[in-house]
Amino acid sequence: MKQYKELLERVLAEGKKKEDRTGTGTISVFGHQMRFRLDDGFPLLTTKKVFLKGIIHELLWFIKGETNIKYLVDNGVKIWNEWPYEIFKKSDAFNGESLEEFVEKVRTDDEFARAHGNLGPVYGKQWRNFCGVDQLSELISQIKASPDSRRLIISAWNPSELTDMALPPCHCFMQFYVSDGRLSCQLYQRSGDIFLGVPFNIASYALFTMMIAQVCGLKLGDFVHTLGDAHIYTNHLEQVRLQLSRDERALPTMRINPDVKDIFSFKYEDFTLENYDPHPAIKGAVAV
Image 1 (tube, one colour):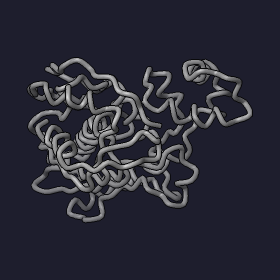
Image 2 (image 1 turned 180 degrees about the vertical axis):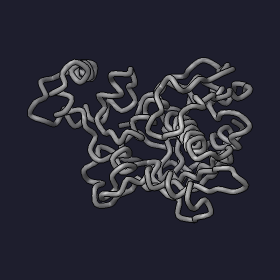
Image 3 (image 1 turned 90 degrees about the vertical axis):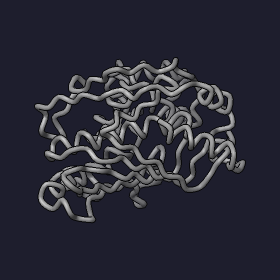
Image 4 (image 1 turned 120 degrees about the horizontal axis):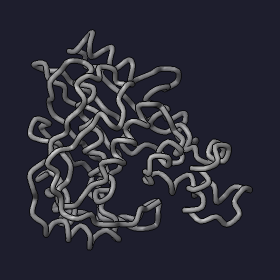
């Protein structure tokens, strides 16, 4: 993951201090691109352990078109909990519950989850129902029928519904490209939290590309990650320097159940990561 290390180094060397929506403060650069050849190994960070279970379940959640955190909570994935909790705290139903108590109510009370666990029309809604269009189904059909098309696109950025979302999409636009029987994907991410979010995003969209390649009968090409505002939060600087002090290790291999030929039929058990030998995880606070 030399590309990721170079991004961290660039932001530390060239980044400008900027205020941000969360009030935390960042060091930021505008415009950065990384390219990962998927045949070289699965691009999962080795300078810290990354929560692969969360990556897989979040991706399956997007593919299902779901926007309620209950599926994630039921599968032990916490990455989206803070956003609906912040909305809940402003509601008449809030009685001083902690985040942990809120999550437990989502897990055990279906009615409560329906009322307070929804994030609005975020990624899954846009992938599967963008103003009535199932973009993911259309994408698969187009790749199979017209692989040379320059319109192999999914957009999560829907201006008409942004105000209804708990968080407007950060990774908001992707384009697929077929050449020599290989599928590549380029993601445009308007805003990238480099320490916490970007490692997730790299692995998630690399895996998504692999899944689509399999169901379309294609080999693996590249994952190209284009970032707009690429930033390190000021409360992550110590963690970033610790990462940079660690040696990089060989990339792991992702095995996908070859029997799955339908993008909507994948299950968590269809993915096996082999030879992942990372350094220990590094904790950092999420800016909400």
